[in-house]
Image (cartoon, rainbow, N blue to C red):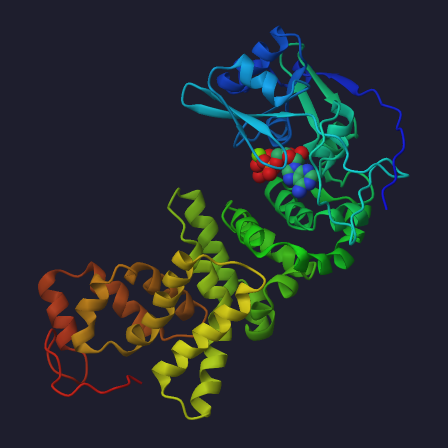
Length: 437
Ligand code: ATP
Ligand code: MG
């Protein structure tokens, strides 16, 4: 049912930006230029969302988003290098030099209900969300109050419709409107809540937090492809460990990745030296050191015990070890895909990481060189290191692989020759056994 009511437009609280350390020079020059140009053409234009929030918190914003009352066609006429994108809600990408700035038109609230906030579409999720509106409605349809601050660098003011400025100063993450309803409208907001709380060190507002445990059931409605994208934002922003802890606390992990809560030992998830925690921390360390991340690595950790459990079930039923492992991988990945679309390029790496574990463990003389040259060796070795550090693989073996990478060519040969059993490196055995235990 659609309700429509007139809501009295509210006036924003206007805050002097300079008094709070915000000046136009903090804004990326391209975005600043665009705001000036739109205003010069007679339309309102401001910076909004994450960039304003981050600037006020003293963080460096990832990107600067511009909003305006001008409609996309107007923006396209104003800027030679503007491209309209989006099918559902059109917005413009404007190029300035080498930057691309997103310029969107204020949006209306989807369907305004009694409290001025709601939407309803069957199960309460937002399905249509494409009507232009005014700044007031634009603020109210955003997720958290701290994400709904507008900064007009020309006037030097912040515009606040929902108490975001006060919340930001108090360090509070508060959902705009009725939390239960807003989480139902778009369950991804649950994930955004834990992401902002852990990355920005904000405290969850009590009402917002109270709605989270019940709302977690809606996570199953998030389309699997969007969930994968969101999961990367959660895990690759340098705060994977605190984010994961919060997600576990609210029961999101059990909802999204039951493979973790069902198969990993409690210690893997909760102890600082558990496999999952070690992997999250090493991911955060890599972000801090500016090293590249591979999505497959964390997912390989998450599903590892599920794969092992499934593989032992197949061997108990009489399957050969290698076939059992490969079957287990297919079964576990197929189960996960219904909730989370993990792209093939990622699952292919996960497969290699898992498959190489047995070779790393065995250290067969004629495999060592081949393994060291394998393009996934580094990831598989890092994985083995974590397993050893968490007590689920052999520390001596792990040290050996660390040493051989540092060794000179001659000591490498020596190390390989010193391995027990088998013939020298590089020579294949005449009769290859069909399965490697
Ligand atoms: P980040 O620094 O991670 O980019 P952000 O707040 O900028 O954080 P974006 O995903 O870039 O997040 O979104 C920009 C803005 O759009 C948000 O600040 C928020 O106001 C609004 N927004 C984004 N996603 C939602 C959502 N699911 N529901 C309501 N508003 C949203
Ligand atoms: Mg952003």
